[in-house]
Amino acid sequence: MMIHEDEVPYFSIGIPAWKTAFLIETIESVIGQTFTNFELVIVNDASPFPVEEIVASFPEPRIRYFCNATNSGPRNMVDNWNRCLEYARGQYFMLLGDDDMLEPDCLAEFAALIRRYPDVYVYHCRSKIINELSEVTGYTDSRPEFETVYDAVWHRLKGLRMNFVSDFVYRREALVLHEGYYKLPMGWASDDITSFRLMTPRGMAHTQKPVFCYRQNQASMSTSGSVLLKLEAIQGERQWVEQFLSVAPFASGEQVLHANITALLPGYIKRKQIGTMALFARTVDLLRSTAFLRLGVSRKDIAMAMLLKIKYSLTKLVMKRR
Image (tube, rainbow, N blue to C red):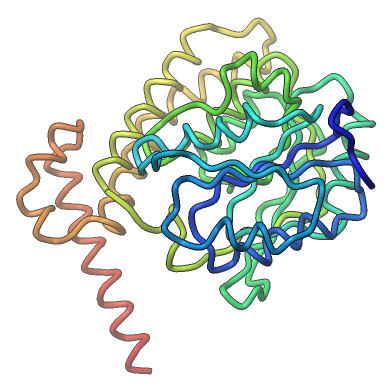
């Protein structure tokens, strides 16, 4: 299907491109959609890799390509997410990682969900977890077809939910009115908070069909990068949730969830800080600890992260010897 310049596509898919190891597969998964009324917006974040050459190899009129003059960097990576949004023209918007994939019926499934729930701003799908060989290794959690923001926040803080930025579709105008994706360093928790902000007035619709594929690999932003930036983002996440909780709901069921979320927040932040340090911090940095203390982490939690890091290392050693 050709989309002319004066026509508004139903979907815009934005790829903030940096890595190229899986970019061909990512683009192919979009071009191969059974629902064809879409545009693909690719914004090259001044990558040193051959992004432009790969995009040029696709003779596809629905692709619109842009290139940043300078790289956004880890702290400001959400800026490139929002550049994708700025260039988009579609009624609905999805951000797609440059190493992830869509199932062929992904957009068709979301279009059907939108028809069932035309008044909400946020749509979500169940996801497949794939490895570097594109083999399915797991699935994200199942959910009800509709839920309120209090349901979503409560489940997330309980550790019962796994979200990715690309398993959400937004009504584009609503996302623009909310100033795009919520900016935190490295996009850490930006996906959650963006969805919560747009869910607040009207809730979220969900499909159980796993039509998005999240790729776990060594180059994933969620498994690499500066631990200090991630801890800074966790503080920003805490501040946003506290602000969200400062307005009490009217419905009795939501009041109960509001109280539960208030009680859950300190433990959730503590576990996230400890887990982040254990996974991403070097032992020598944990021993020095000064930078972590400045970000509101206690000495006790640093010690717990050290113990957890030792446990991870021993587990890896045992697995290698088997």
